[in-house]
Image (cartoon, rainbow, N blue to C red; front, top):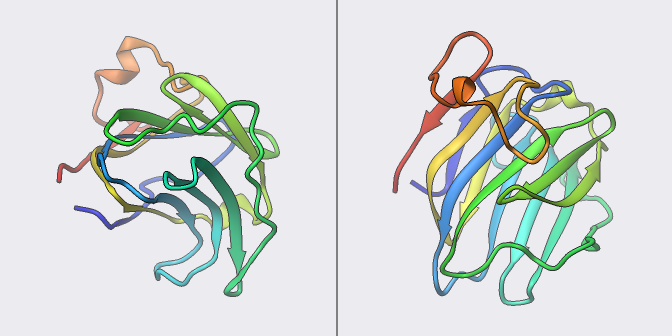
Length: 167
C-alpha cells in the first residue's frame, strides 16, 4: 500500500537501476519517489522526484538536514506522467547523476548532491497504486529501463532483485 517505505536490498551503485510500475489515479494531484538516506520519513533525501499533476510539471530536489536544496523543474520534454495512466519509471545511477526515464524514454537527469552510498531506502507516496514497487538490476539494464529477457524472468540471482506489492 501507499505510502511505501522499504530498505533497498542492495547498495545503490553506478550502473544499477530502480524501476517502479504503477497506475496514477484519475484525480491525482501529486506523487513522489524518494531515495532516502536513513530509516525515517524526515531523513535526508538524495533524490525527491515529485510530479505535480495540478501544475503539469515534475520537481526534482534533495533534502539535507531538513533543508531543501534548489528545485529543478526544467526538462527537455513535458511531464510524461499523466492522470489515469499506467507508467514504468526507471532511475538509472550514472557516473555523476540519476537519469530518469518514463516508459522507456529519457525524461531528465539529477546531479548527485548527496553521496550515493548514503541511500538505503526507497519511499513512494501519493495518488497512485503500484504493482512493482522497485526492481534493482545490474548494468545489463540500460538507462531507459530496457533489459534482456533473462534478467526480467529471474526473481533473485545475486544481481537482480524484485519486490512486488499491489494496492
